[in-house]
Length: 177
Ligand code: URA
Image 1 (cartoon, rainbow, N blue to C red):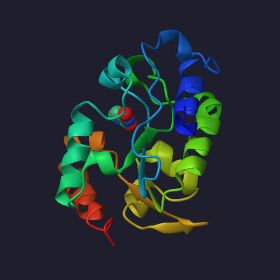
Image 2: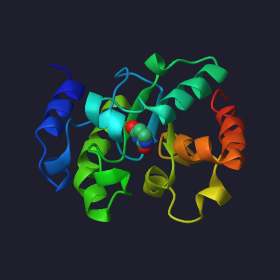
Image 3: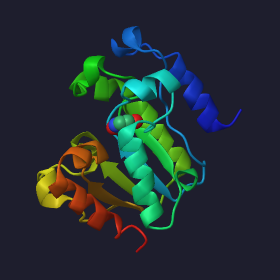
């Protein structure tokens, strides 16, 4: 078993917060262990919870389109979320849920050692950016140790708001650089 598989099986048994009670599946994340690019979303939704895979609904389709727009596929990147279980009715993650899940995300980053982390939405942005709103700082990369972090709008928000859609499309073009 690889270290990432080992981590996924720990996540599958996790009962560190109340979300364990309502989940169908945990959604640890997926992608190559040596991915150079890592995407961190917010939390699994309905489809992700059903399948145990991240970004497989409408936001995921849009994320795949964005990847194609820069000549990449989802098979080349690592995709995960700040929390690994679906919150009821897709509500925002609570601070204690983010805290309970933190060791899993920390370990994923440690194992994959990506060159670039793209945060999708406010909750994963908060891990690296302590000040500024997403509207102010999206698309501006910041170096954190060896990793370049790029904060982007969440693709689900972009699906509903033309302004955010144009912004995420433009911000995505910075990734190849
Ligand atoms: N939104 C997220 O933040 N993550 C998913 O996996 C799906 C939708």
